[in-house]
Length: 196
Image (tube, rainbow, N blue to C red; front, side, top):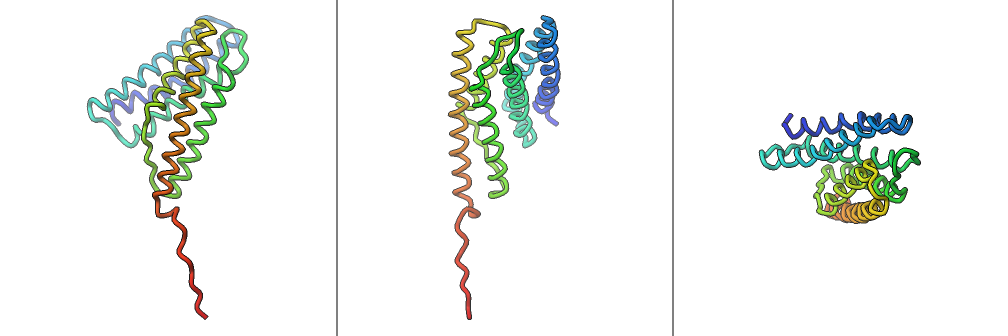
């Protein structure tokens, strides 16, 4: 259990706290709940960069970290984006098309990972700049809505996040198809000859 993995686990534990504060804020409109939601989201977002830096700087990369890190990102961002898409009288909403793009991409990637794992036996995920940009832009979109900053810029951030998310999904699909096509299991089975 490396330091980087411990920080990632902390991020995962912050997700339910963030969700509860968001629900309380929607129900009661107490500013303290919104501030706690912003604080927990900001800590989780900053720790995403910190655990990545520690893993690279101190050579703490691990198979567990390779699974936990994207899982922590997905749990935080998907829960935040879904909560901010639901009509909310106390806070600005994120557009439904952003939520559909984010959730749709993650579902397609998850299905692809399962197919590749069962067909090939191992999944090689190659992080791309578009995926990292999508994560950062999604975080900015969520924080922008939570902070109740100008709505016109919220649209710009959401559009940029949706474009990068869609592009990263397309690249992951191409990578997955490449892994499947290089696998011997995707080759046609040899013809069976029947002798009388």
